[in-house]
Image (cartoon, rainbow, N blue to C red; front, side):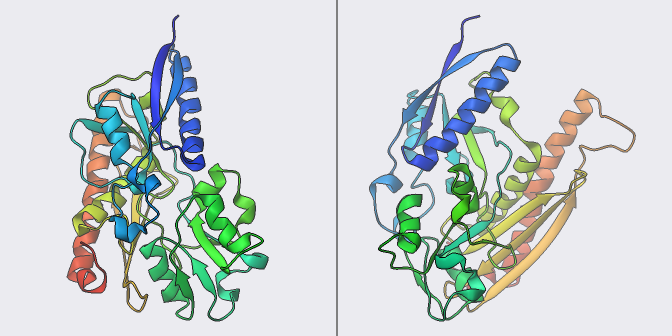
Length: 333
């Protein structure tokens, strides 16, 4: 059987190419298992976020890493695009759809510090680098004495600021998922617990996007339901708050091991870390039945209902936060 060529668009950074490689390998395996073999061709696309050295806050945050990839999809330059979900705007993109969210890698943030120090062990007044207002706010909430330095650049560039021969920082904070995908978990001195550093909505999740209505062999099999449900809740919350990916908002959805419940925890903080608002809520899921496996039709209906429930949970929690004064604490718009 002749293989179908699938063109996958990606940013040209090492992390983006590595993430796209994981998706390409999974797609090739899934398509082969389904009897519809594919050959993958990678298409490199440069985004605004790659060209500019300005901070995420100055760039506006949301969309700076994805617009060019989406344009390439719509122009039929590629068939799929692989994004870090946390970089995607929450609003739907006309003509496009997120077909798959592969299983999430750890959503947590990681501290990479000199001498393997933990956050609590950093010296008073330590200089810690991050380009994220969310991370900055939570770092200052935990350690008001820190000097948080705005940094940009690829993973190795940022690590060098703390761990290199000419280091000018005591530590940097990066996504643990990105370090794991690059095989650099060895530089992590502490994985920051959610009660210290709530991750960004969608962190650790890849989004595989395509033109609406298109058929790409194997791509649907890459979707991981617990990941999609958790990410749906997190992004629905962000959308209702009208907050972009640069806002000081952290959220983490978790599906229980038995698949029966979805929990969502969230943090909203002031940029200086002086005010922090935490909330949580949960919902029941329907794709598990005590009486045995659901029929195909019943399962399909349950899955649709669960995605709707996840989105409703995010909206519900956002309403609770707004009622509690979230918009007075953090710049959400």
